[in-house]
Length: 138
Image (cartoon, rainbow, N blue to C red; front, side, top):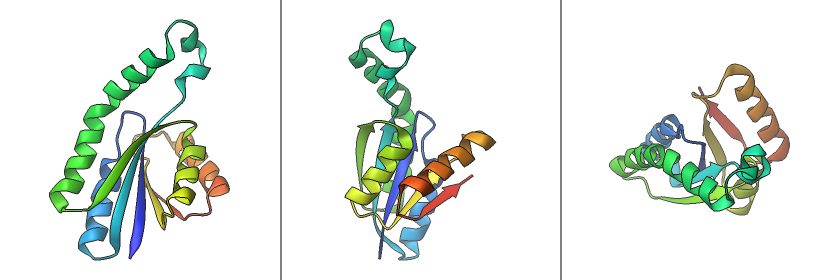
């Protein structure tokens, strides 16, 4: 049985990845799912000059709360055992780190909200940084 890692990038959520994870659980391919909400480190941009780091984190958390609730509702409804964490850092490096640290067997990334070039840039960086297989849903 596989351990699945579903990263949420930003406030768009991972709804398609959660549906795919629920399907794989129903087919008895997946035994455990971990959802990580990856919030980019905002304190390094220009916005940090005008706002405190904690205020930026609170704003980003509030924006992503609805998407997180939808993602979790899909997994709850399907009866999928899962855990979730909120982490801050560069998205691709953070996903690769958690996939290795938590011994995930596969990463399922919902890229339906990403543009064409951004989608392929993210996938290329993940393939380069991670030894865990990555499946991108779009």
